[in-house]
View: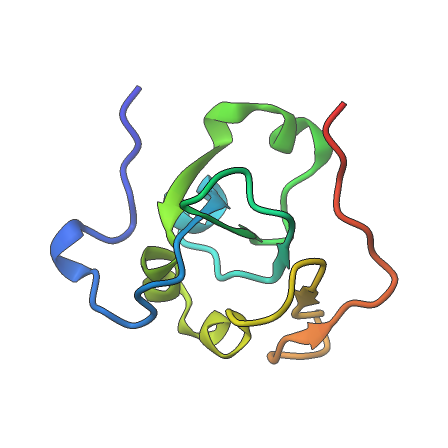
Length: 117
């Protein structure tokens, strides 16, 4: 099944180029939800920035299905939600969320990135 993205290629503008690749869920790129949780882990390869972007609506079962997320340039996700841009230079291990009470990202200090088995 082909994914129908919320933004077409011609709608992607140069907002945050040069940050490398990332992983984002279909809740953002297909369903159009804003980024409400983002973290940066150790990159998987030379083109990976380590950034992972989620809407906050994903449960474990959703995240366990590789069909529900994809690899993108960070600039692409910045076009979906420009509010991520000020945080893109944060160090590996950083995490930020927008809580229901806040429309701004707040740093998360009581969270650890998931570990691959």
